[in-house]
Amino acid sequence: MKHGYSHLAGTLLVALGVCFSPLSRSMAQSSTSSDNTFSPGVTKDLLVGDFDFGASFTGKNNLQYDAPAVSLINLYRMNNFFFQAAIGGEFDDNGNPSIGVKFMNINYLLGKGWELRAGQFDAMPFGRFPRTFDPSWIWPLEGTPKGMYALGLTNGDFGVMLQGAQYLGNSVLRSFFYITNGPTLDSSTGLIGAPIIADNNKYKMYGVRFSLSPYALSNLEIGVNAAYTRGVGDTGTAFARVPLTMWAFDFNYAPTVESLDGFLRLRGQLNLVDLGNATYSGVNYKNNSSTYFAMVAYQPSMADSPFISKLMFSTMLSHIQVPTGADWGRPTDTQYDLGVTYWFNWRTNLKFNYSLTQHEGNAFYIHLGIQI
Amino acid sequence: MKPGGNKMKIIMKKFISRFRGMLFFLVISGFAMAVAISACSTTSPVVKNVSGAQLWAMKCQSCHNAPPPNQFSPQQWDVIIAHMKTYANLTQPEQDKIVAFLKQR
Image 1 (cartoon, rainbow over the protein chains, first blue to last red):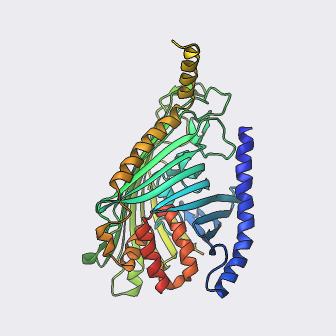
Image 2 (cartoon, helix red, strand yellow):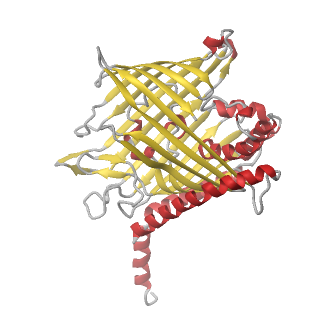
Image 3 (spheres, rainbow over the protein chains, first blue to last red):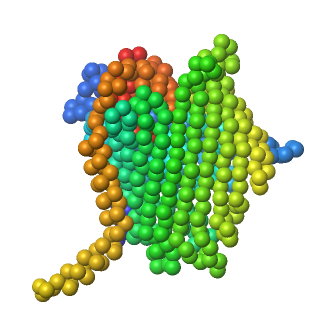
């Protein structure tokens, strides 16, 4: 019955998307010819997306093309209602094409900076990286920070969310509150995995994010994130009552520095994951893990040379700490990245990236990212 | 003790045990929201004197390159600002000023 409700909610969201999309287009055309008004509300629709493709060199004569990936995002707004859905297409490891819904949610703008949201979210407000920096046309390096997607929650989730931003004197407080299905658990390895719409147990994930921009006229933002669920394993198994507590701390700052003729991007995030004790494949260990990254990027955007002004230089340190005794198929590892990105325009980049890892070997990447 | 008092206690205990996580979340969130609502304001004297162009450059640039205003129509900017709200969690004055600037082109 519980799963039935989940399916019903999913079906309703799909139906809303299918109905709104063609309808909104016809409304948008009508609205253009009638001074943007269409009774009973004003409707607006937009199709955007992103594309990325690249290649990696991991040694002499070892060139490998990365599978191209594309996603299309439909955005639709009618007064205070806002609907967004994304479909993504890519090739799997065997070269077979796959298409799937990446996210689909409906949002109501409550006013005064508050918004109520429901559906499938593409990335949860748990830190900054997956939610705002990950698209290839935004992130200046080819690779994602080490271990960032080892957290199940970062892959998106299904549920409801309230978010808002308010002034606190001359500071800005941005808040998120959410209740979602929560991650799943691979009981053979102790790794948490992506949430699924047909929830695997009766326990929900409760999460909050607070971030503070200490000065309203600066884009410095410091965030604290917490999420908790009483159980992550499948119903009916010994893992159903294994609790999960996660914390993340993040910062983001992108100042313009006139003395450097350009701007900097300073970003970082620390994730702490604490799964309750359990025995995985006969091994009992303390299932605590952590990941972090720190990135600095510099673009001399005010340089006299047009070519130089379109270059961005970036470097990143990232790390994953795997629990002692865990059989995760990946070791505790640290990665260093150096990159040069050329921006053809504000939404198209070509990246050259050298990546050094302690355990997985080094690689050189070339990558193209486009927002379409 | 009233008849049924023990039964009520047991029901309450079961309820608290069953919904402990949710209650914890609601109490913490409610407290945080109460503090936020009482202490926060929907505007700031500093932001009142800032132009939409300044906010556009500052806020967009914090995550990605700022798109030029002429890239999208005024109707499309209304949609995009709602999309950006879901990611950047902009305040109401930030949304209003940025979209007004982008629509001027």
